[in-house]
Length: 268
Figure 1: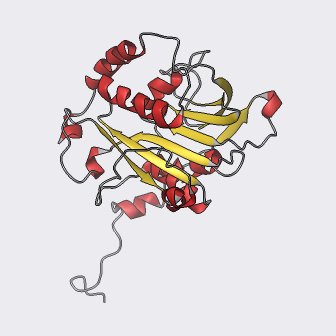
Figure 2: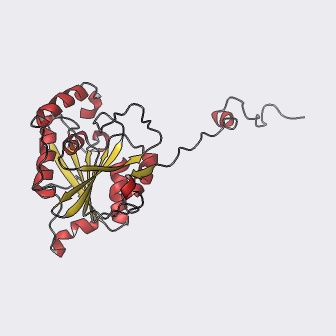
Figure 3: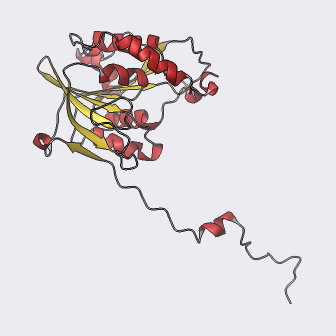
């Protein structure tokens, strides 16, 4: 006869791992993909520079950049098109890809206007770098994530710092100037994750000169002016930024609305 005191009891029907045995696995999401215009549908691109913008200040500035041409988009199936406008808008959940000819060189710009999860970051980075799009250089523009930053961040702090691939850091040794000049490097002990980290890792893996520039705070006219100044001085010198004379004032009203929704923990 079994000893009801010392024998191990059978598994409980209420254990979570047992309940999961009867739950059908969720369907995997379809893979992201690139869509280009008919003329470019089977073409590979070799731009001198690929700019991937994710931060609010960089998205706002580059959206208003003159003389760029929409040539394609990166589609994440989990984001529906139903809420997007016909013409590209900063309010859309999209990733439009533009071409910009500057000094007889092709520059491509990807405006990532949705939040890419960590699970999808490597898939997206492979599409943007190294398959159909093979750039000589890459610039990634993102914001500092306060939870991964070593030290306290105040809303009154305004700064931008950078990380570079080993090949980019050796540019000065080979006679090339750094893509972004005059910026300090990201502080030791701080971490970058998500799509920005995946893109920079992709550059390192493919031996492409890559620079990640992260700025703080997430919103505000001052940080947008800082990013605008860096791009026009070092990256897009000679480019007309916008035909809209109210670029700064437009972003000021936009960032004020966004600030109302920010969690106070961003600034701790």
